[in-house]
Image (cartoon, rainbow, N blue to C red; front, side, top):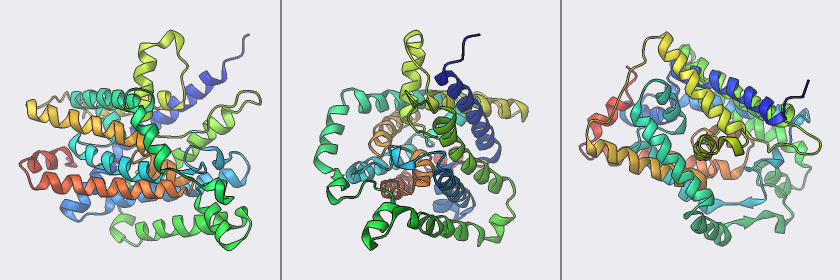
Length: 367
């Protein structure tokens, strides 16, 4: 019997992981855009704490896999010696602002597709097209110029990674691995304190569980690509959950299936939509939803385009950088995360001043 290709094995594992991700996000209403909306409009930090709980759990799990020598986080796109600070700031801000226009981040877009939201289908297609244009198309020329002009090559300072672990070790003149759990404890510990100091969050049950499960899925993603997908001759790129670049790759995969190879992001994207769909059907919450008018459609399209460009410039979205990237302790991920939050709050404030606030609150409603 012919052995199954490693890309197929990884694809199946990624689809199953995405299935759990989508089902969890749907059932627990895990939404990073919704978290910012709750914070700005209602001063409710529970969903924000769920996001940061996922980040803390992802950091602990990812660093544990690295310490056990099951993966090498220094090989991820987040920890390269090229610190793309300008892309992280500009891209993160664009993505944060864009997701408010489009009614949610990449993760929420996939979850809503599974729930029958036709607006999110349009957002996914536009975001994916603009993401691919920024990676390899027309906008890619500007992206390359920005990277060439602004990226800082840390290797010229004898620093081989932008991980906070490497930067701190270089600053105080000690071994990198000696600092790994010091930095992990500071960052993850600080996030956990923020999360669990709230009695309301400790008793939130479903929301807390959502953050925990999604946080665990990120190191599981690293395990899929770094352990299950390991090959002595052609190892697969180390990757975990992210939703902007994979949107573009998924569209290309659907169009060129016979000549294309599935990867973690494409398979996980399909899994998330399917997992959300299963939960929506099981809970009888599935319903078709379309644009209310032309202006609603235009706002979503513009937001999706901005998300696609910004997500690629920033190397990830609210999950891709805010959880997956942060799990590697990369300083670029910290910059991107702060920029996404800034852009998201800016977008919410912008909408609050116009006539779109009632519609926005309806989009992010927990009902």
